[in-house]
Image (cartoon, rainbow, N blue to C red; front, top):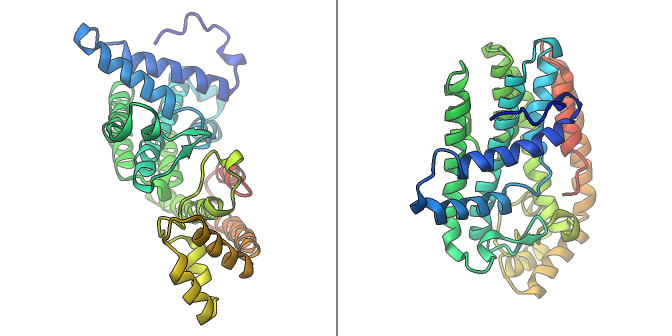
Amino acid sequence: WSDEHYPNDVQLSDPKLFDRQFEKLVCELTEQDMTDPVLTDALNRLREILHYNAPGGKRNRGLSVIGSLREFVPPSKLTPEEVERALLVGWCIELLQAFFLVADDIMDASVTRRGQPCWYKKEGIGLDAINDAFLLEGSIYRLLRRHCRGQPYYLHLLDTVYVSHRCRLCLSLCCYRLSQAGIDSEVEHSNAKHILLEMGEFFQIQDDYLDCYGDPAVTGKIGTDIQDNKCSWLVVTALGIMTPEQRAELEVCYGKTDAESVERVKALYDTLEMPVRYHQYEEESYRRLQNLIQQHAQNLPHAVFLNFAKKIYKRNK
């Protein structure tokens, strides 16, 4: 990728660099190395898949790669090539998330995602979206092979991506950043794990809460956990504090798709003051995180973890 047309990169913010990187990777995946006319339709489809599903989110995961690398490596030692790779890996994480979301939306029969119809709901897509999800996943390995194969952390990065899922994305990100910054100590990786597993657990609980109480105009999606009979934090916590009569009501309504049943479950949650309980849990989780950072990040920049925490705690989408 030539940057001869971008002489003022140093003046661009990381979000702007990140956005520009997306157009570069789309170009690479759909134009470079694949010039056979037979592939034209397939590559146009891939371009559409990428543009529809990868952008549009909060980009916290992707931007945290370059942001945290800047915390680990002094500016004088951070080369343009390393910045480029960090931006690229950040987008690979975003592609991984897009892969999950396309598949999840099909399984959950969701309607909207990021303020637009789910990919499988788009006219002419349907269950072909299953194959499209695999195209998103395959794009990750193609990009990593091209741009990171010669790096000492390449195999670790592949393993990290391979075993990742939503509850461990923040852990995976940090393991990559530690490796890229040259921090290979098992102790430091273990310390980061202690901190980030706490953060990852809260992130999933937060998703459960927003599925029910989030504003679709803000979250960009309509929650379906109640209808889908999901074992969410809300229902598990509610089961632990409700009366036998309330449990009987829940058993009648939970997992049903009609609007009346869903509203009855939400009314139960309100009676049990689930929003209050969630916000109490959020405060407790944040305090635990602060303690973990003090205990386990003695030789790591606290800002790496604190910056990531600030992006997820108190979020509303």
